[in-house]
Length: 178
Image (tube, helix red, strand yellow):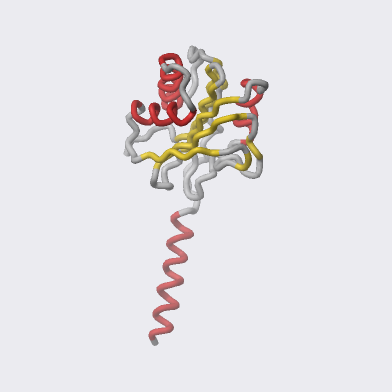
């Protein structure tokens, strides 16, 4: 009897788990707007991504010879995000959010995001190698980004912004409220 109850409880847990990650009856969202901007945010694109990209550009403009880590930490300090964030240095190669594509061409890289992985928010700050074309680097990021890298959720916006030798890349929901 105990084995049967245990088996039923396990089956119920499995069904609930699959249901939590399943789709909804809502129509699929359109592909997100994505933009590559080189030091100029006058183009119109997704509001949350725009606001956060502007925060990054302002930090780059006011910092004196910052590292990618310093920029990421400063960004998180001023971005007023509603979650506890983590920051982690990364090296060229396979990076979260880009599937099996190796991301190379940077001398410093930092990944940042929420400590709770159920929030579809993932960002990077890269300092490019001197010989790397920033526009091509941003295009590589955009072309290979997987908005569903986070198993049960999907980002709705994506932005890649370059300022000098720095690139800010972000996948996020359209809103961080409730």
